[in-house]
Image (cartoon, rainbow, N blue to C red; front, side, top):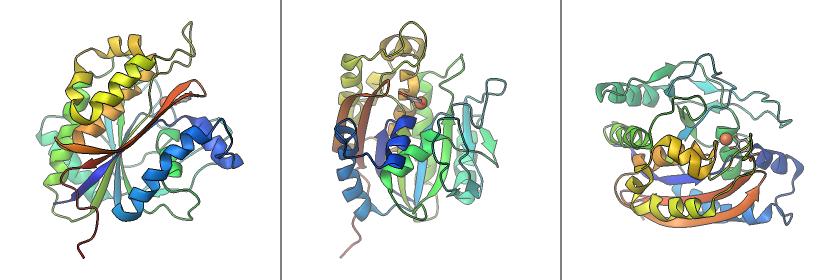
Length: 287
Ligand code: DHB
Ligand code: FE
């Protein structure tokens, strides 16, 4: 059985990648966000994950509006990043874990989640910005990736209940895996933000606080309203909270909160970071 260590939840604003490229993490605009990663770096030093299961949304780099799977899972040996037009340096490729990907896919399909399988897949800022935040400055990423893309872009969107069920089913798949990999889960995006239209710049602190308070111990509370109602509360891109909800589902029933940070705004977004340890985790090696 794989060792599920815990989950990292973070915004994935492309401008964070720009700040890293310019080395301005300590500037007053950026430090309240980047400092929120100090406890994450401490945790990663002990946790030493082998694999990251990343729930995220693709923003048009891999899937465009003409072909939009509701749930898509990578099953590739390697995932490349590419130029999305933000002017960011393209990040080095990330190794995949095809055997684990196929195990998760088989388990999900057996559980009646009809996912799209991707044997080649580009990954955008929603994967590489969180990777840069977790492992700054290295020459090789220390984890293999299983990317799970949720459609938060093209209507109709999946419901929060369905995303939570997907995450729980991924957790079940991990618990039935024969290997002893050390696994971390990520949910990227959010919190409230809207990039376009009349409400561009919209942020809803009250809704964000509700999500941060309930994600650890009562994630079902985040699924009591529809995805359309979440857009009303959180903005048209705030619906990326679906990625957080799914990732939380994979961690199992009980978690403990190791770190939480909320800072507004970064670009147009209410930026947040949360680190949860899975109850079942064996983070430290036995003495
Ligand atoms: C921004 C936020 C996002 O989640 C994204 O995918 C792109 C841009 C922003 O606030 O600039
Ligand atoms: Fe986004």
